[in-house]
Length: 291
Image 1: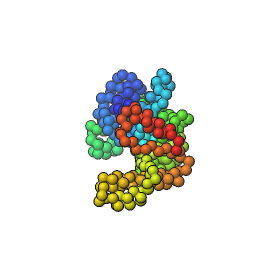
Image 2: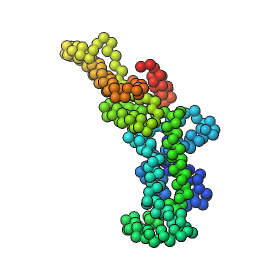
Image 3: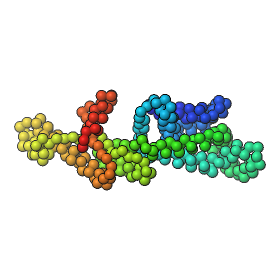
């Protein structure tokens, strides 16, 4: 399934609030912006959706395996960092100030907060505008009781990522930049003590020399270029494929040298695009072959 960020956020609100409070939150302009476009919301909602799917699998036996497909590795780190960023946001001074009146309602602290935050609120009014600040304050007050649940589920899901039965598979093309990104992500997983299953190098050039090396093919192409241009072109193409395959093998060997304990599997470039179950089965068969 494709992650629907806003729908997932709405589901969280509806499942952890009574009907009146949920309607108040869903109608709030700040919530509508937060749930659809704020930086970091997508990564946290991915955590929430993973938590929902895991709970459903445990309850109903719906799935044997849940696969989370993330963007390239630097963006995948945003997914790993989402719980910590959420906790920092919820514990931040700005949120505490906005939620303090709700938390202190009916208590002596309400007057203290009102007196102490007056100047700060005036500055925010000028910077954000009175209406935006009002929407933000209303939103924070409405979801104040949900903050603990947000944090708890994020922490629990993060712990699930490091638990037995979870495994990370890093996928990279056999290119310098892609393998550098893969190396960065592998190091980060090791630092966070996350379980790494291995690296899949996708679309490897699988050129077989068949007794004709790249140098021999180029030399033959030069000799017959004037006599048979088509055969000469095929020989040149053969040489180029062999050169590319050798270049890719060197890059992969460099990665393996830096990460000798990382299991590695290569998948050759296929003649056709992979867009159906038959293509996925072919990829699966290739992954299962011994290296």
